[in-house]
Length: 302
Image 1: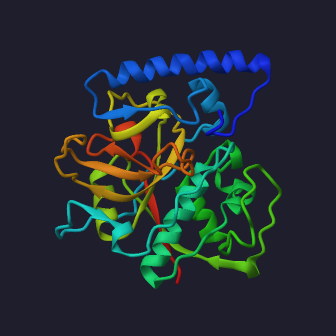
Image 2: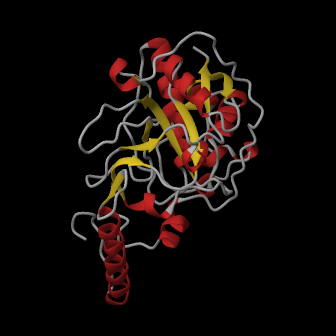
């Protein structure tokens, strides 16, 4: 309670305590088994999965509209492992969306910030709140959800996006306050990767820049701690979360980390905490949680 700055009245305390006990049992049972990842106590451990979905995930159906690809696969070889964070100051710090289903906005700004930094060497901090407030005409729904591919189109056709310093994040739906003269970043085009073509995602991250993606958040992911997230998975809709993949890697054989291909991705709705990693590892090559169903990246106008 103290670590995560939570307080309850007496009636709620008993519900939260019982929920915490139930989640701790799940964690202990999972960690006693043979799995590629570990669970742990975090700021969600006093919540049911239904409560987490209601507060942090998308309540509006998010079916990717970018099913037709304009991404052209290359012919040359590309490295099997790349980390844009190690290539230079090309990946911005992971942020926290708070109690607003706006992870799609952070994935959008993160990918555009990286694309601009790779092109110019300059790292910007862009306004997620502008996307929350203003991008509804492109089938986004503020705190109720949206998709990076659609947000890139909004920025492309709406004269750019402002900086976070002039349009600060509020973590709630608001009226649009966009001022075109204060826009600092622009999108020339959007590269939509072929539906479920995860190998094209690998190539895009390896050769160009980090990729935004949407994925289905599952109950055991809520308590993820470390290791490579992998589980039996059956595709369902709608997609419920968004992430940013700055790294596709083949990890070395280590005692705690199985040697299998994986993605190292920004976790936005649990990003800025002390008890959770800012990035999570998720198995690559199996379209885990549908992460290749709606992947895209922006081509900046610089």
